Length: 395
Image 1 (cartoon, rainbow, N blue to C red):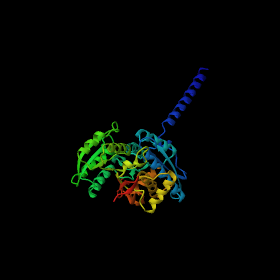
Image 2 (tube, rainbow, N blue to C red):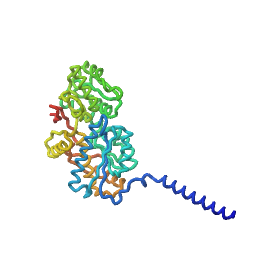
Image 3 (cartoon, helix red, strand yellow):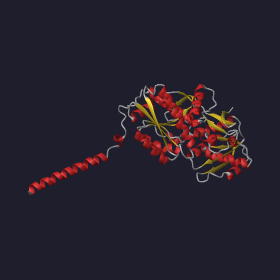
């Protein structure tokens, strides 16, 4: 009996150890093994990330809507290499942590390519995840230099430095001012990055920076002090390299001071005309640097604007145009690479990294858009001015 009991106990212990070992192996499986399989897939899955709620929602909703129009067109015209496209967009509220959560949710859905994120800080956070997963990422409007630091990330918009340089050149070349004041958000990489390059490029130009004032995320409701100093310095143009919500407050407060310089912004200004409860007459004469104008007369722009207005009831902005062009960039590059949905995410990324630098695209934001290996686009900037409550191309 003792021998029999010992044998039974030994067998029980062996079975217990086997079960524990099997559970441990299951719990320590690699992330790649847990990722949704694409083998046998019959549709491409494109994800998007951006703010559709919160203070920057105008940007995210514009990108989301425009990508949907592009995907609908692509599917109606045979898809990508004969395969249809599925599309899912996730809200990140312009928050880096929530953007990473959105990315993980889209990965669980089976995303193979990412258009996003829409704003810079979340884009930088997500780019650290996409490079680890070797997933191809193209941001429509993440303009901070760091957004495309990784080799798998490209952008459609101009970078912050390029916007700062181009703004100074445009003001100089069109003789818009002799004395320029700057108000910028020193706590934001987008705003401070543009300002740094604008300041550098202004050296030797036909205008002088006579005042430079800051604000931060914790002090962005009262700009009376900044405006008073800039007005006292005699600035006839005020450069505002930040987002439209703060710019709207500045325009309101400038009117109360009876201060009427030219106000000049960058792509973050786009969207001010759709800001809720904003008196758009305050933006009359406001200028901004942009690669897109909804009043352009070419067939592509007019078709897109009509579709966007019919579907969403408003005129599309630059962010919408950037998102639309991103979707067609993926189509063009994927077709040149002869990709199929059954390819792994990593293989898709490697192929797109190689082909995107060899294509030239005619899009809404440029007649001839191409890309460098560092992720930066090549295209020509434009400037628009707000007249009678609408964006029109500046002379």
